[in-house]
Length: 246
Ligand code: APR
Image 1 (cartoon, rainbow, N blue to C red):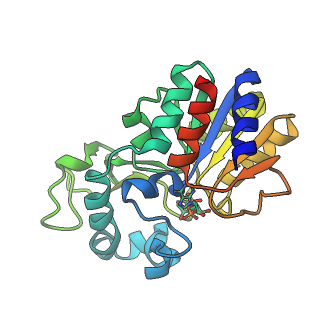
Image 2 (image 1 turned 60 degrees about the horizontal axis):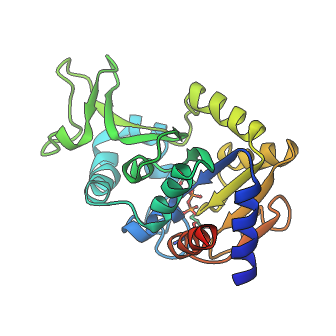
């Protein structure tokens, strides 16, 4: 691992435009469970039964009771960990330009990153399905579900359900960031959900170096990524920053 930490620090120092793609793995050290693998949310629920727009349309109260309420409790009490803070420090050093995140927890912004593309939306807001008015999730009264807008419409998370498209502006900006970067850090994603998992492919095609940080291999490992640093994001980011500061 030491050699790869030194290599990553050298590659980051030499890079001109660094972009990061992040997934649920970077937030596990903040107490937010991942989706897949041991202890993942999809071990307990079938994602097509609970996180697909058709499931929400069929029975919004069920999705609110089983998924949204629980996520609200977890996300409301979570705070950034050393993985998030490490990316914020890379931005503060002028190395990291943009984060493309699949996460809906807002922890990158809470850590201090200023250019965060929320590829799957953000859970901090609920949106009315009739008039599109937005409400801060922390202000929504969930004693009765589904909660309603003042117009009477049902409120839904301002996040992307399976079966929905990626917000067009997020898609456009992410493709651009991937095409323009010369190094992409891929942190804490299983890289199995499209089209987010295509971003490292676009970056690679444009000549960028791809560096993965993950305790496990992914479909990118050995195919698209130049190397994988096997470890938890918090520890690995701390060690890379230490090396950069040397
Ligand atoms: N540090 C770094 N990586 C970690 C850590 C950690 N501390 N803990 C777990 N991981 C890795 C796991 O090995 C796994 O590869 O993070 C990854 C988490 O994968 P998923 O749970 O599949 O999360 P993600 O890739 O973000 O899922 C993509 O799927 O369910 C949908 O919309 C949801 O945005 C999500 C998308």
